[in-house]
Amino acid sequence: MNAFLQSVMPHHTLSKLMSKLTHSEIVCVKNLFIKKIIQHYGVNMDEALVQDINAFKSFNDFFTRELKPEARPLNTEKNALVSPADGVVSQAGDITAGDIFQAKGKSFTVTDLLGGSAERAAPFNDGVFSTIYLSPKDYHRLHMPLTGTLIEMVHVPGRLFSVNTATTEAVPRLFARNERVCCLFDTEAGPMALILVGAIFVSSIETLWHGVVTPPTVIEVQNWLYEQDAPTLQKGEEMGRFNMGSTIIVLLGKDTAQWNADFTANKEVKLGEMIGSIIQKHQPELVKSSGFSTLLKRLGF
Image (cartoon, rainbow, N blue to C red; front, side, top):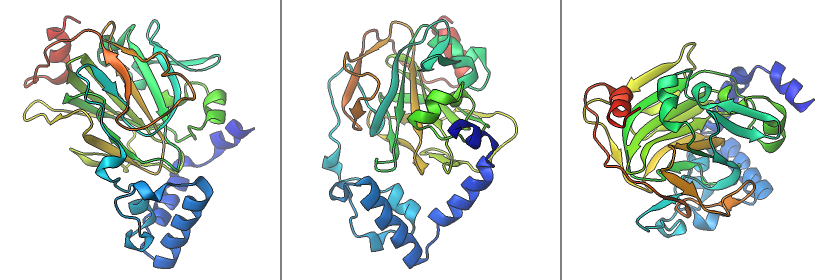
């Protein structure tokens, strides 16, 4: 019933209305909203760099708040993969024959997730994935699991189903149906994809190098290739944020990385903690001529 009701809801219209509310600078409105969320979800404001709710110009300003530098220590072990966000592991494991496990009886393909491109999906065949869900109480900025040079960004239009557990278990191919922003990097572990998945009331996703990617919502897949002056982001550095909460998916290639044994479904994680390790390294190359396709050729795909 939950899934059916969501399927007939005007996702983007509702998200636009929510965006207006969360960006309102009317003091009594935004302060009431902030207080209710802190109380209902138990938000730990002791970790926030700014703790006075009157200092936030809007609810969204509060929701994307910065943390104190010491609140999320970064694991600096040489081969460590670190969590890109605060949240709960929805699923983590192997990519099998191009499929990513979503929930019992449900999966979706890497090709669909990355906007329908077999070329983009190729380096992740038989690799590993992790899906991390961010709840309203969590820190909503996203950071790099590894140092990486940006190769391509892809905006894939879609629906805005909720990404909570109940909906994930009910809606087939959920993460390959929701609107999302896919960021493809070259790293010391080879190609890495970070997919920022939108959800109901989460129609705004932004990245450090581009700013707000969505809205506006688009009809066709659009992409940006970073051929000249491609940004390189260090492990632990901020790469983007959700304006309201959602899910981030991490993809890595075959035999390049492995997750920790306890990095499994329902585990709570914090930004910067070690969640896996690199098991095979390659020398990252700054691609200057033809984006991701050039990178794949250099890596033998």
